[in-house]
Length: 53
Image: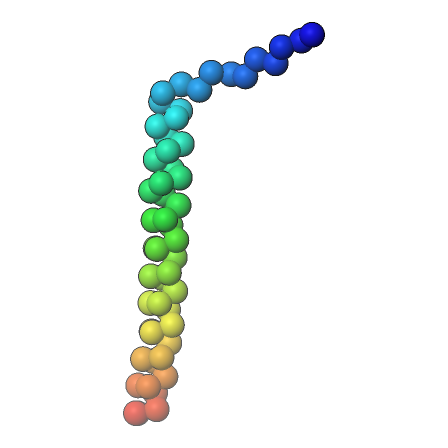
């Protein structure tokens, strides 16, 4: 029988993976939502100003 050896996960790799999954992914989602809200509100304000003029 052959035993399959899995590479050992170092503490540094484990910490970076935990940091990425617990902070970076939600941060990117929130930032994407904020940019989308900015563009939508900018478009609405521009349309309102053009109608006013």
